Length: 177
Image (cartoon, rainbow, N blue to C red):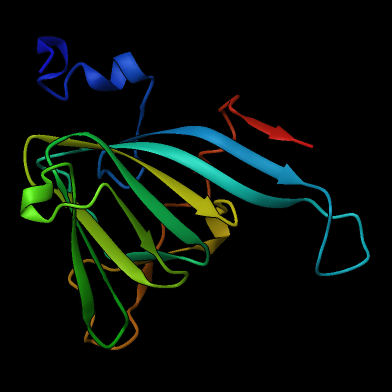
C-alpha cells in the first residue's frame, strides 16, 4: 500500500473530500445529471437522473440508519472492507461486506433497493467507496433515523442533517442538459 494513503489523514485533502455534515466521514460529489424531459407529465421539468458520490469512512465513523427514495449502488474503491447492513422497519435483512477479499465472500459492489434502511461502518482504519443514486440525490428524499433505532422497532422517529446542507450547491461536477 502506498504510504501516503496508509492513513485517512491524507485522503480528504488529496481527493478533495469535504466533511460530512452528519459527522460520519468525508464525501465528494463526482457527478450529478439533470434531465429536462419529464416522463410523469407534459410540463418542462428538471429531474435528477443520477448522482455519484465518493465517500471515506474512518474507523470511528458511525452512521445512523438511513434511507433514500432512490436505488443506491455501492462500489468498493480501497482501504478496509465496509460492512453494509440493510433492512426494513421490521428487521435487518442483509449484511454485506464490500471489499476485494473474495475468499472471504466480500463483494465489490452492492445494490440497496429504494426505501430500504441502511447503515455502514469500516471494518478497519478507513474505507473508500463510491455510491450512485438513481434517480439522483435530493436532500428531500433522505430520511435518517434517530440514534438508537434499529430495524425491528417499527417506523423510527427521524433526524435530518439540516436544511442548510446541500452537497450539490458548491460542487462543479454536475451538469444540466
